[in-house]
Length: 94
Image (cartoon, rainbow, N blue to C red):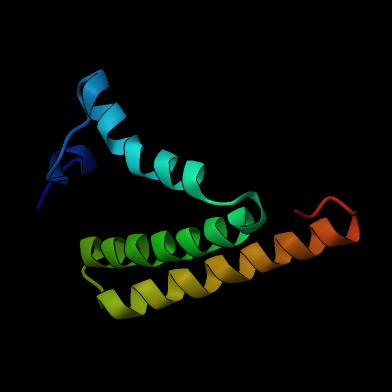
């Protein structure tokens, strides 16, 4: 087992080229998404990222991957909905 998270990851972002390579896909998706759909795309991508990171976190902690992914996805989606609700109340929702 790794002592530091950076040593556990199968990749490293050491050079500016590595950082650029890792950010190409999200920037391309954002650039190609119609403005009217950007909120939906951001919400869906965030839900997918939450489930992946929840599964990775559960795996790293020795827990069930599916349970971890579902837990993080549920609570993350609930937090996003609450944030959107507060934004609507104050008139600043997207």
